[in-house]
Image (cartoon, rainbow, N blue to C red; front, top):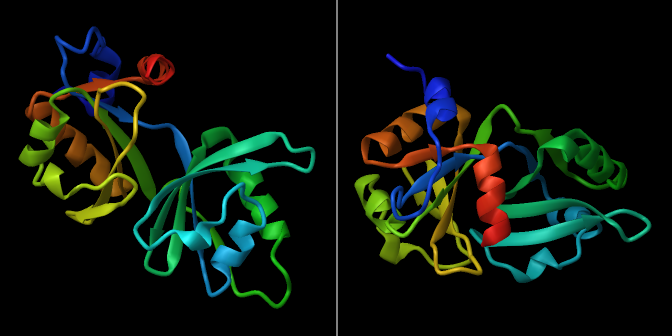
Length: 203
């Protein structure tokens, strides 16, 4: 049996017509912030006020350093009493240290490294909705800017400058191979990092 890693290496991404749905396992860092003062601590470092967003909101924000330069980019999942941040793989530890350094002695907050616990998959393609239905997700229930629970995972619509649909999935790392294998069984192509970079720049 060909391993999933071998499949990832073997697949060659061509055009959207030949492969209408492509899944990308993102190389990223994932941080979980929880505690009574989690939003206060995070707000000190962001370019937006996350207090204005409801639970389950899919938010994008920037982290800037003392000179105003962008040091990291976040995709947020505000779920229950915790905030999940998807961000730059190379900045994971540095970003967590910076957030931790901004915590006051009297604030209640935990900043956790979830790199090995959670994974991020992006799905794109004109027939993405067909794939989602086969996975048990009703695309009509998805709202832009909002995470939806499905099978112990989260999914959200990601706005794209093109008309090609893009969806984010956040799930436990222990479940990612099973989900990717299901996608392949339903005709989805597994893309690689360079192919994702090309798609992201073009869209």
